Length: 207
Length: 223
Image (cartoon, rainbow over the protein chains, first blue to last red):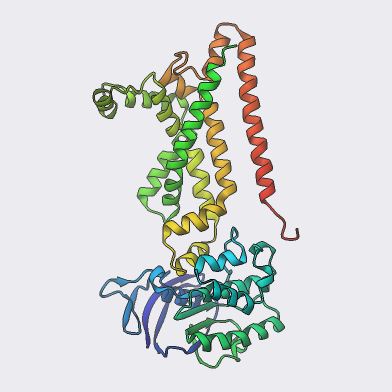
């Protein structure tokens, strides 16, 4: 079970607001997160990943405390090893498609499978600069999956894809999530784009 | 024409650049990671040679390097190393004088990279050091090349600090800029012209090479 009970003060254009999430999540589930801009959706994902520290609260994953402000526990992102798909992709300009995956894992068979899955096997020697927006986004997803994470965090992962690519990728991801049995948190501004994923919806901030 | 000042200048610039590469990279990285009053003060001190008259910096270094004071006194007594009027002293002064040319571009280039690059690397289980070596450093290569060339070129043209710390000892501290000044003082305009032309040519070729390199790094997505 993944138990999250955190508070974080955020500063935005409209002044200060408080991100407060208290909820339990079943391992292997998909949670779809909605909310207006600036409500703290990305911050919430980064707190789970260990990239941002909550002001108060705790995160427990399968009985292990990842963060607990009372006990001063804060597991670094390196030890949490959550797969993270960033909104800006965060691809490494100096690495080719294959090198991105090799940087994440040494498992050559898994890398080959991922390249096939993402339909990037013909582009494995290309750097991100030479990939289309959709290909870059697929690479970002593949890189996050390369470490076979228990928790996958996706921040607006389909925002730059056309409808056809989006539908195809979502169908593939639904299968991959089942195979890997990872717990997925997906942030999207478009509530209906994630309808293909069976899972709970939570709203952060007012909508 | 005596080429010793040219070779001495090139030797000084090469050693200074190498040392600054070793010092400047970790320092630039440290300054890039977050802000604090301590970092602000250190960054201001590193940048001071850019705005301070070289003679003022040279004067302070002359006092600091005096064998009658503190660290320099200990160096002199323990290892018989003298910093004033010596090549070692010139190297140390050059490292301080040229430091902003290495640290500034490195820190600035790191700050311009999206924070998500390092964050993505951390989520893949990579340490800060691995992230710096494999992700951050390769992506600031053009700025790093520029920093190396500027540091080297700036050390070539150093005058005020060298004069204050090193004086004009042939083969020891008589670098090309001092040789130009010395030749002019002696009305030997031919020698001054030769030294100046060599310095001009070296720095010009270096800068042109960097501009060509940087241009080759900026690739259009349409290519």
